[in-house]
Every structure is written in C-alpha cells, then in structure tokens.
Image (cartoon, rainbow, N blue to C red; front, side, top):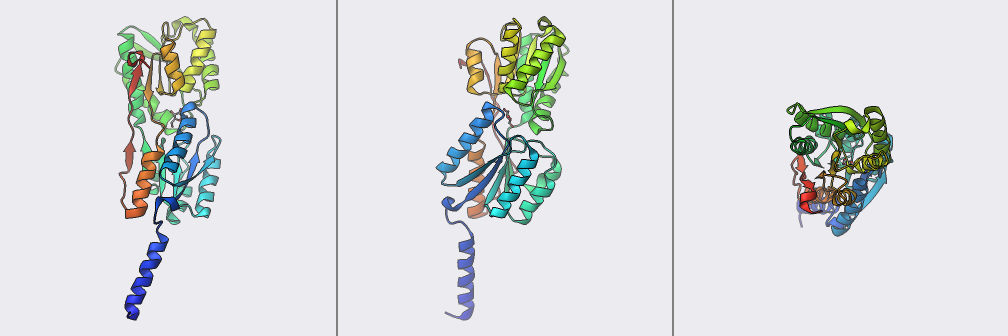
Length: 308
Ligand code: AHR
C-alpha cells in the first residue's frame, strides 16, 4: 500500500469511527419541561418507548417548568457530548446563547411541541410541532358553530405565559372571534396548563361574572378544562350542557368528561413528537439527510359525535 493510500484508508477509518454505526450508539439528551399536564406525562412516556424501539439512549432532564433548568440541562448535554439534543422550550424567548453553544459543539437540536422566537431559526435542525394557531382556530370554529349565532360570552384559560403554544392558541381563537360578532371573550387569564390552576382561575371567573352569564369556556389544554369542569360543577353549573367547552390535547380524561356529557370538544395534539424527531436525527446522522425545518403534526377535532 502506498503511503498516500494508507493515509486515505486511515482517514476513512477515522471518519467511520466518528460516525455512530447504528442507532444503538446514538445518545440523545431531552430537556423536558416538567409534568404540568396529562399530555406532558404522555409525551415523556411515549418518548421513552419510541427511543427504546429504535435502540437510542434517551437521557431525559425534567426542568420543573423552569427555563434556567432547561439551559443548565442543555449545557450538561453539551459537556457529555451527546449526539443530539431534544428541547421542549417552556417559553419562546431566551434560547439564542445556549443554542449557539450547541451549534458550536456541532450537536443538532430538535424542538419538540413548542417553538422558539424567529431569531433562533438557524440554531436548530428541525421542529416537530403542531400548527398551534390552527388549533386555536379549530377550537374557535367549533364554538362559532355550536353557539349557532346566539350571543355567547366566552371565558378563556390560557397556557403558560410566554409559551409559543399559549400565544398561538390565543391568536387562532381570536381570529375566529373577530369574524363572529356574537362571540365575546369576557375574561382571559393564564391557568399555566395545570388542572389545579385551571380550577382556581375558573372559580374566580365564575365569581366575577356570575356563573349564569358564561356561555362557553375555551381552555388552551384539557387539564385546565378538567379543573374548570370541577369548578363549574361545584358552583352548580352544568358544563357540557349550560356551558359549552372546547379545549386542546385529546387526553383520556377529557374523553371521559365528553362521554359523561360534561365537556363538548377537544382538538388532538399527538404526544408522539419524539418518533418523527428520532427518525429525522437518525437519517441526519447516518446519511446527512437534512429534514424539513418544520415537521408538522395533525390537529383533529373530537366531539361526542366521535363516540369517545
Ligand atoms: O406544548 C404542548 C402543551 O404543553 C400541551 O397542550 C399542554 O397540555 C402541555 O402542557
């Protein structure tokens, strides 16, 4: 073998060694938000099973709703030299510095279920999310139809302040309200995507409005709606009958409420964000295949007519 051929062969071996030969060698760090909702718990558990299916080692760091914990987790993943980082960003701003560090370390980042501000667009490989403006619009269209042109005072339970999904679900719903003069959002406040806060805020809405004037509740997730249903029942109201409800996620508990006639509609958000994200990372690592910037998941409406 000539010395040139030897050098070329050595270089090839070195390149081959630096690339994970199989998915079994891939390690992905996942900075998860926490466990604020049933949907979030489902996403964590589906992520684990999707990784196991593909023989990928998934390291999950629970940030307990705090962005600072997510930033620490990302830095720790960089220091560990993981092959990729999954990030479910609790809020949309404040990521540029840490994502630049990941980029400098040549670690691809995939966003799961929430977006970051446009300034960070070049700092991640792809985002697996739904169209959350569309989700809000689907919820609004359902309500517009259900209200049937009658004057309808709506109270809104918003998600976490600063989260892309909260901003967008509001925006989408408001766009439908703007086209339907009979719909009026009379109260709107964050319930932080949790059941307990949803109940607490709904209680304050009922106190402030006097229960009977509320025609509908729109909640940015099902957990807050389940809390709101409890608050309405305790106040002697009949959710699902006297008060229309529409929320987002399609978790088992809202289907139970729909089946019991205590809720009306939900927009599905799949908890399987990790499956498509893992496929994208594996193709990127193995063949350099660059995924589309946005891998969009479906947003389907479910009501009692779907016999949940
Ligand atoms: O980002 C997705 C949202 O986060 C879900 O709709 C909500 O339940 C969760 O907390």
